[in-house]
Length: 120
Image (cartoon, rainbow, N blue to C red):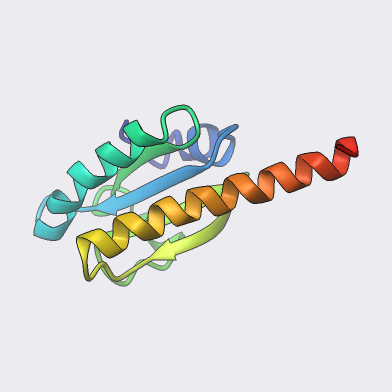
């Protein structure tokens, strides 16, 4: 799904599950190479995370708000807060491992929070 400044708040910030936002641009070759990995990540973690694309050239307010310095830039948000930022993508396997570790850590933290509330 493509996100713009018009629907960013309602779709991304209000998401009931964590969100991985991919800031990209049509002229960015690396951005196009990252897309299949992000599609696979979305499939692997279906229902537990949403992956959204934002064209940085067409959404300058968001690009400025998140102080983008390079593309692609990926932000992992939970409950509207940036938890992790990926500005530099050096190695495909390292990036995939980092995303999966982030999700496992998030699940663990969410589980601990739930356990503390219920006492179980």
